Every structure is written in C-alpha cells, then in structure tokens.
Figure 1 (cartoon, rainbow, N blue to C red):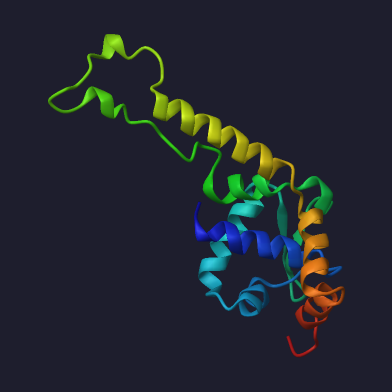
Figure 2 (cartoon, rainbow, N blue to C red; figure 1 turned 90 degrees about the vertical axis):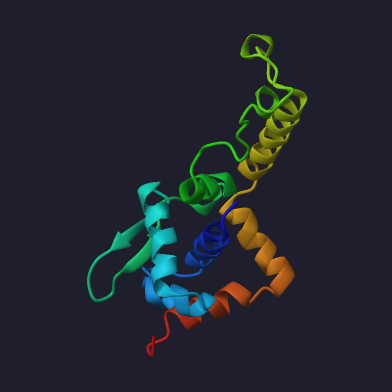
Length: 158
C-alpha cells in the first residue's frame, strides 16, 4: 500500500471538520507534506468521486458523500487502484525444476494463502468508514481535536 493512502485518509477525516472547501495547499500545510504530492492523492480521490474540487477564491476540496458511506477501502482503491496487492507470477513454472504449465491448472498454496488474506483485508477495510475514523480521532486525540483542526483550516490567516 502506498504512502498516499495515509495522506488521503487523513484528508478525508479532516474534511469532515469543516463546512466548506479546503484548499489543497492548506491541507498540505496541515499534514506537512508537499502540495504537489498531496495534489496527486486529492486528484485520485476526485476521480473516484470521493471528493470534489470547488473552483474560485474560496475554493478547495470537499467530501462528496456522507462520511459514513465512504469506506477505508474506497480510499485505498481510489489511490492505489482496485487491483490485488499480491500478483502471482507463477514462479513454480521457472528455473531448473519448472513445472509444466499444464500441471499448474490451480493456484499454488502461496497464491491461495495470499488471496485469502487479501479477501480478509479488503473486508476489514470495507467495514471501516471515514465516520468511524472520525469517531476514533475523538476518542484517541480528545473531543476537541477535529474542531481545533477545522478552526485552523478555516482561520482567516489561511
């Protein structure tokens, strides 16, 4: 999983703390990451329909859906794509002891184990929403954490 997923998830969480759009530069400043790097993650979220860009002087990014309807898996797939994390390259058909293709009609034990783990991982990420993360931020960082972030994001000196 790429580091962009972490930044995208943080952005989705903090966007719940404000009413209006937040400029990408302000989000980058909050997370101490380069604006160009964060812009790529925000563009991926936008292509996936999770955020939208608002143009103009008071423009920026806003969530497009209720945080309860955006899963962590939605964000992961927006940033890293929907493809599998593990791709079998049929190593068993290589090298001096290579198995012939006709004897490899079913996935090997490693591919089966990885597929099972991927299924469990995706189900776990699908079960956690941005709203769940927001709740956990309040529990872990204090009830004012997101309100303070929202105030900072919308401060007039922004």
